[in-house]
Length: 288
Image (cartoon, rainbow, N blue to C red; front, side, top):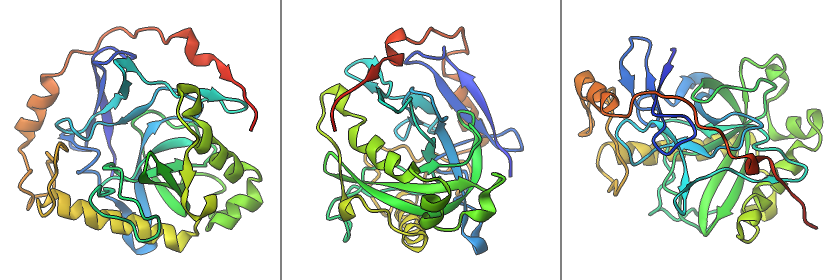
């Protein structure tokens, strides 16, 4: 299954959007139409890359927009760029989400004691390839970290791209610890401190910041898939989320290809890229 992307608006502006098409050239939602499984029998999942490794722009699936294109997050009226907290530069993995999952904000997790963050479940791809924005990859789940972000459960699922030359050597979280020493510790450090330059406190974690293993992580991903099923079938109140889709035929949010195309055509035409502010490259230092 292959997907392509189409840019609209001017990159590095608030109007920029990245829409998705399937192999038939039909517009689709990366939240609702890309299948969760690449290989269900082997628990191989699809993942949508929102932020390529080493970049700073906080791109995300626009869960409240029709067709859920990628757009850059905005805080206090400004485009959001993640700060570089020494020694990290931008995101230290390919960062994204698993489609057809949803962390239900009305469900209190029995392990973390906090409700979900109202988004698809996040992934951190540790493979060597620096992916492209909007690239859809197939991934093997290795474990998960339970971030508590402003009182919400925000799972970070550690994965490796199945196309990585070393993918066969990674089957659980201990393989990451053994074969990429320091990467898990850097991951905890990154998530703990990345909001501090913005004046926020350090983030907290469930399980004392310990990673849970592959089986736990897969169980967590599958539970968020069940929450998504309830969402897209209207058994759960979607609130402000937009569940427009072109493939879930029994969903009340199902739409025609023509309706989907109209959404894209109504977006701003693709234009010249705006420069990224030089302040994005600043490094922040402080004592741990």
